[in-house]
Length: 92
Image 1 (tube, helix red, strand yellow):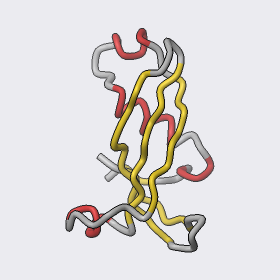
Image 2 (cartoon, rainbow, N blue to C red):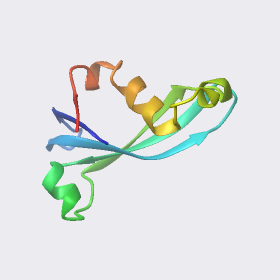
Image 3 (cartoon, rainbow, N blue to C red):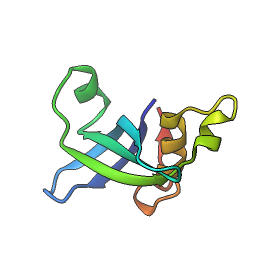
Image 4 (cartoon, rainbow, N blue to C red):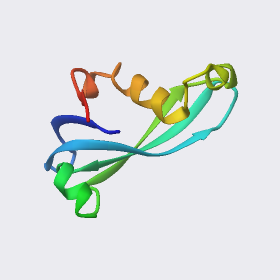
């Protein structure tokens, strides 16, 4: 899974493919998520380096993870779509 939406990075590159690469529960209420942002899906498929890595702190509890069907990566994607930068993004 990944999110697709074009947006300009701080370095001026316009990228449109974001993939969660790591999720670490750092407390009973917060997870740290690393997102790799690629130029596009083809760049990811071709094993190119991400344009940038982004860190997000997401609300997440052990109770959230206990619910059937939930996994930390899915929860991070759901959280990211609530942020302005990923609003309107497409699941790919």
